[in-house]
Amino acid sequence: MTKPKPRRRLALVLAAGEGVRMKSARPKVLHEIAGRTMLAHALGAVAAAGALDVAVVIGPDRDDVAAEALRVAPAAAIFVQARRLGTAHAVLAAREAIARGYDDVLMTYADIPLIRAATLEGLCDSLAHGADVAALGFAARDPAGYGRLVEKDGRLVAIREHKDASEAERAIVLCNAGPMAIAGARALELLDQIGSDNAAGEFYLTDIVAVAAARGFLATTRIASEDEVMGVNDRVQLAAAEAVMQRRLREHAMREGATLIAPDTVFFSHDTKLGRDVLVEPHVVFGKGVEIAEGAIIHAFSHLEGAKVAAKASIGPYARLRPGADIAAGAKVGNFVEIKNASVEAGAKVNHLSYIGDARVGAGANIGAGTITCNYDGFSKFRTDIGAGAFVGSNSALVAPVTIGAGAYIGSGSVVTEDVEPDALAIGRGRQVAKPGWAKAFRARQKPKKAAE
Ligand code: UD1
Ligand code: CA
Image (tube, rainbow, N blue to C red; front, top):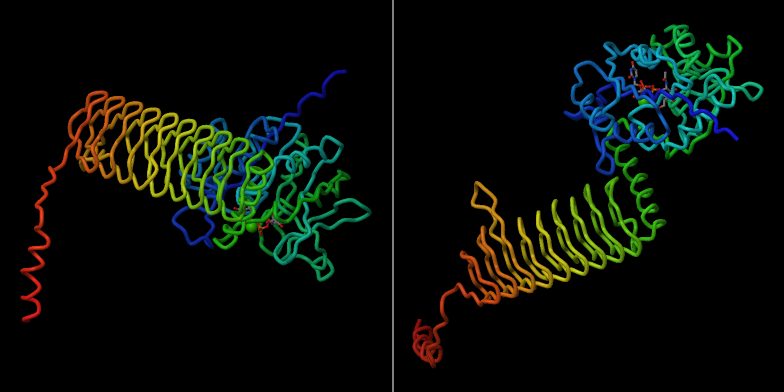
């Protein structure tokens, strides 16, 4: 059997438009969901849907949007829609790309960030099965404002924009989600037929359906769930999309073998990686770039970003792991401990109230409560190196750059400014002075004075 030839697919992502309702200095498509811009979500979906080439249409003077597109998809071609004359006009800004010749031209909007690759592939499957145009429909809870899918004898014959729809057409609940696949061989021919004779005076991409139907070409509908095609126009919708994305990420983590005791209270980044049998207690926040290996436990109220946690390590409750925290197997990071750019090697313990930054804590070392690595002099950062099996007494300040040798002891309350030899004891604090009976004598002097006042 011969495998079917892979289809040459161009993905077009429309990312023009400021999104004035966001009331933001940032363009809408650069707002983030689960730590990733909406544009990156859309580009991720089209890449996973097997696009050979990607074109992104942006508004004029949007170097920031172009830069984000190229960061995520370095091979993407960027096109500028100089004037906002409608969605068909935006698609035609990428005429040069479409003209290269593809089996499928797959179009999606950057402001519907929850679209799944499988759904986009479904649109292209419709083309593979003979359709010339495939639109994505959904049953809208509130159809007002959306284009309506007008079907006749099981065929899609038109998409009518809300503004242009008759009373009868407005009663249709099946709405246009936006993404669309167009047979590459006909795309330009159909797009060039679209006019702007409508209520908005715009070139509507949606009119491609009526244009195709009038020429006897086949347009079909695929159905998506409303959650997946939800559009983001303001910050209320941004939060609603975030909630849907978080639900997906939680379900994914659990299906991959992590236990979330209270999933609704755990917040993930799009790239969080949890191994099997990881236990995440309630109220944990994962920022970007976190990897947790098998069997580790993340106790309640911890905040992690840019951190790696190895197998069976234990973090929190109330721990903060910042970028560059690298916690080895079986190590423990306890309550009110902050770790930044530091490795805590196998079996080491930093259990209470400590700051470990720009440091190495050797295997099996024990860092007492209240230990601080003093890593910053206001200008530069310096490293602290703590050897394997060292024991740092509580409330010690380790003034970097400094090395504590393997197996050394640091007396509690020390300020350590010089390197400590392996297996040595270092004490850096005022010597204790004891004066027998002093307190009793002091009280005996003070009490009569107070009584006389
Ligand atoms: C569009 C669809 C509508 C669908 C709805 C789903 C059209 C004509 N209508 O309506 O059927 O139900 O989306 O949310 O397509 N854009 C450009 N350049 C332009 C105009 C728009 O890049 O000149 C981009 C916008 O930034 C946006 C997208 O295309 O990302 C959709 O445009 P918008 O004006 O929001 O269309 P809707 O009225 O929402
Ligand atoms: Ca819109």
